[in-house]
Amino acid sequence: MKRSIQHGLSFVRFPHRLCAALALCIALPCSAAYIIVDTGHTPQHPGATGASGRVEYRYNLDLSAAVTKDLQDHGDRVLRTSADGREIALQDRSTAAPDANFFISIHHDSIQQAWIDAGRQREFRGYSIFVSQRNPHYEQSLRCAKAIGERMLAAGEKPSLYHATPIHGENRPLIDERLGIHRFDDLVVLKTAPMPAVLVEAGVIVNPDEEARLAQPDTIAHLAHAIADGVDACQAH
Ligand SMILES: [Zn+2]
Image: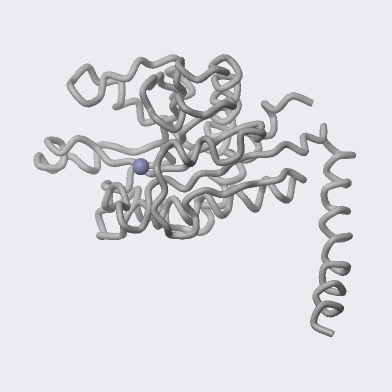
């Protein structure tokens, strides 16, 4: 009985999803890609702390959930890493599905401690995108970074650019200033991914104004659309 109820439910739900995917395939080139969506950090090691005290992992979790839903709505298959709250090593994220077509890691940003100590938090805002030249699919990674950057700009987001500041701890070479794309060759998830890979810092949560905006459902939705549309636009058809 239980089995037939479950089967019945999946029967009701499946055609709906299939129709949505098929409708998109007719309207747009159908990607049907297999994507790893990584939630940066873990609850135990949650990354940056926002101005309000809410930690980065929570922001990453909300945005990666929205990106996953958008990709699935486009007909893609998605594997989420670090969304279940358990500890996971960096390279276990990027190698979780060797047959995936693309890996994207979602983060939110901090700034240098010296800038925080100087009370400069409100000077920093915006997104940044990273690729590694040590990834075996660097050119494709960069194509995807550009596709995402174009859509972030179109959504009204601005690149932060401060990671290019020529100081210790920053100094990330800017590949594309207009789109906010940097090279960061030693980022573990990017250099160990066997597929094209990009890391997105969606915004600066140590800036209290920016943090409040990044917590808004509307902001999460438009960031997720920009990221998911960019990911799908750069997949081979
Ligand atoms: Zn992070």
